[in-house]
Length: 109
Image 1: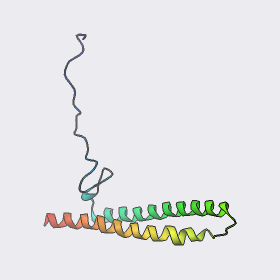
Image 2: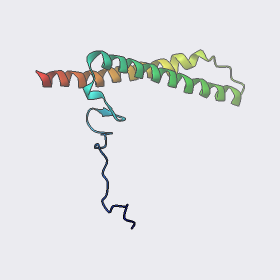
Image 3: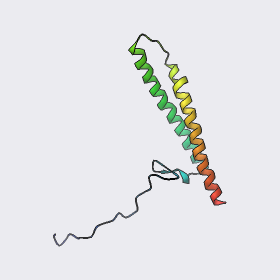
Image 4: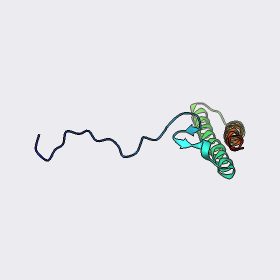
């Protein structure tokens, strides 16, 4: 060791953030969100699920149509993939974030 080096181990200045547990979703503290923020995040999650499911549905129909002599309309992807999955995820997100918000409000009272 040189005289400028120290033998102490350094610790991080702040504790590591919680990435899981009650009230955390992928590191985001959803248990601390307000009413409008919870509503906005649930709606955004539903829209993201709709677009992701529609994309997967369109790609699946593309592969299915090119694999054989099929002619399924691509609007089927919106009706049968995107819309049902988006609505289900939207209601699950509303229920989950609404429950967290209600628990927080009851804890305050």
